[in-house]
Image 1 (cartoon, rainbow, N blue to C red):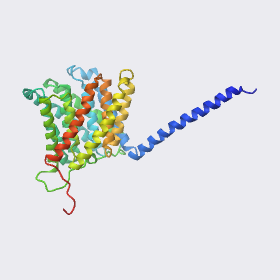
Image 2: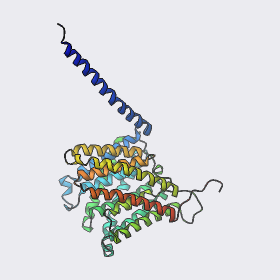
Image 3: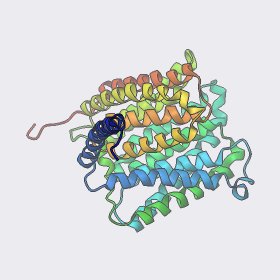
Image 4: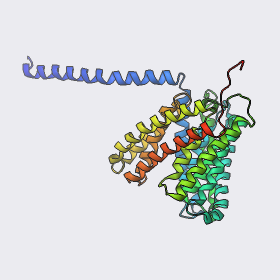
Length: 378
């Protein structure tokens, strides 16, 4: 029995339509995989990106367990604190063996806890300096981010973790009564970051943090390049604290953070990092803002997008600082939104004050003990 000619025509049209859709989808998928292989041959950075997300998730889950969280004040988000410690410890860790990586992760989590503890001890007396007084503590962390690079990759990570600990304590308004919570968060973070690293195996080859910046430039200088980098970051941070105290900045800590991390081992390296950070921020923030309507209705999709963005961050960070900054800016915006922060003025302030911090970092790198590259033979 012959088929209806119209039914056959419909099947043929459907087949042609399906083939067109398949071809349209194959092209971007193929391009994506080609980009992944070009940026991350051997999948090593993708493994590290997955490890970052896993460490964050384990720490956040453990921090919400009632048996663990009952001993800390309800005002402290133990899961968020521990997850942040674990995430950034995993970012800073850069070793090739399980044993060395586990040791470094433990030290990095302890460093973050020490930074948070230092903030809660020192910030109280600094409140006499005004509402921006506690931010003065961040100046010390900004200095250590640059100065401790003289002790290698682990030193650079410890300096970064101390600052991050101070920043988290500042953002969460922690006090002396929260020291126990900080210690518990460090223990959770160490466990949560070490387990994924052990399971990822010796095949993972993390990229050295030396690839994240231009590196200290050689030259005939009175002080070491790392000391100058610390002074540059601390000077920019201090200027932001003064601005906040005088005119008021809505999200000054973001400006301090941007100023701290754009300082590189030379003025030219800082210029390059500032340019890439600005470009990444200008791309990542609008993409994040565009996803805000989904935050209230599809939070699971938002968290999945954030996890994917952090994997891209880990992959791009060594060579493509602009892509890394864009992925991180996107992650920050959408995670803030899904956590209940939907104020467009607040999110916009965080974006433009990040750019302000980058500009101040550039100015301090150019005029505060500038580090010049010396060509061989000169």
